Image (cartoon, rainbow, N blue to C red):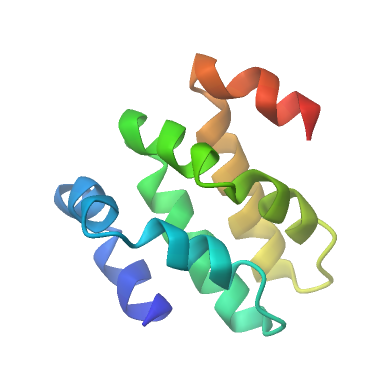
Length: 103
């Protein structure tokens, strides 16, 4: 499911729809998976969704930030790339800047 959402999240028209349909709590939960591939797919989905300004705030409010920061310690490069990219996308919203620094 995470892989399918990642594919769907590439299309900007789906960014708001995916969040509105309730995917964020599941994606945040999947960031905590012990499986690298699932972590990569969940963080990749969030990275794409975080291009949208409304989603940037919602992703942080949903509690994704501590899990994304934890993924920066991964030894699996694809996870590092997606987690770092997600944090970068989240950081360009003024409401998130301080929260990111706190983490």
